Image 1 (tube, rainbow, N blue to C red):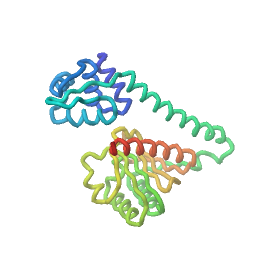
Image 2 (tube, rainbow, N blue to C red):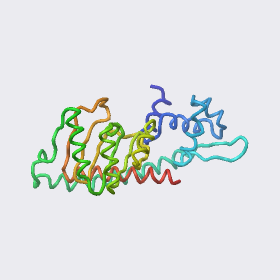
Image 3 (cartoon, rainbow, N blue to C red):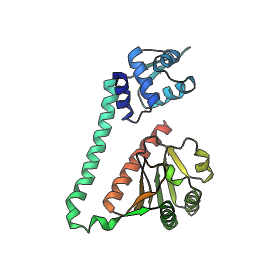
Length: 247
């Protein structure tokens, strides 16, 4: 693997897209550049470059100098990567603080298996989700769009929303925004949803894997420690993305 490919892959671990990674690396290599120069170096489609640069500017990876043409330069790698390191260090510390007491008290709790069940079959999963969503009283959190783009699930989410239940959807929404808007669901785009779940009232969730093209197997989870972990992860990502949108 070429060094550029490895660097691009590593940057994608920081929640950059492939094109964002290539654009930032192009600016690191070329210094102050125009959009045309960046596009030619990075091999980015013309229709995408301005959106990519705007996204990188909002995230602090790029600064722009107004003019005709506009000029762009990369923020020093040490500055931006140190910031990313601090963010991840805080997340890891939070995970340690949450997971440690769960682990240490696990022998005192009931069997872990009592809180987790396997649900097999698309229809069984759909029925369980419909049951959960119908019982929601306060909040529904959805990570990943694929599990909900089914008419009966969308209808159940929309019904819960009309009852006053707070519904938040975090996932890859490109191409399905109109469905979410029609259902009056609040959503944010999130490209890196490696797991997918629907959680109700912070008490129960259905969890599936990103790799599944057809959801035929899922985990139903009521373990309080696991629920807390997923809530913290969801709220952390929601807060960050909401701030990016606000900026």
